[in-house]
Length: 218
Image (cartoon, rainbow, N blue to C red):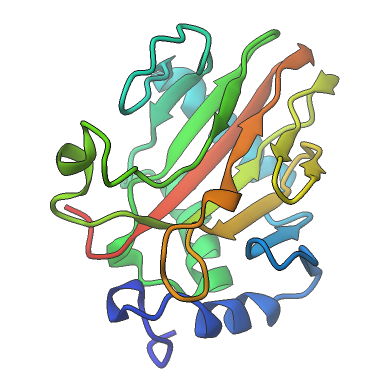
């Protein structure tokens, strides 16, 4: 991994894409609007089950940066997962091997839980430079660059992730990874990454999310 440029190099595209494409079974979205990959079976079911247990132990109501007045905008629960936990470390190692991204630029792994009727309406993962909370969240490590999300279970109905601009809906499936570059090839923020965690209709949905930054975390 050391021969690949990291997120701190200012060149966030080609080498990471090339690295991701070396993984077996990876599918790249055939869209010029954003760089997005899907990989089924990224995490084994037993590891997914253990991560679900970790999320249940620490979950709390989810929040958003730059509140917009919509109380129903994000209704899931979120939990920060302990970096020293061997189960969390297994997931982190798989993510590092898959992407070649510099772990120093990664935020701590988070888990999310969506019960029936819960959702996260259309949003981007990066922080708006004009937002009121931009300095609070980005003054040290910079903005978010890559997002990696893994579904930990398959809800009975609903819970898909919709990328509106690319006209792509991804159905949740145990162990399936979805990852994307929050920037365009030239490094500018990409509003075409707007996506929605659609409502769960039957059952519960669990995911883990790993975000990377422009500069080292912390």
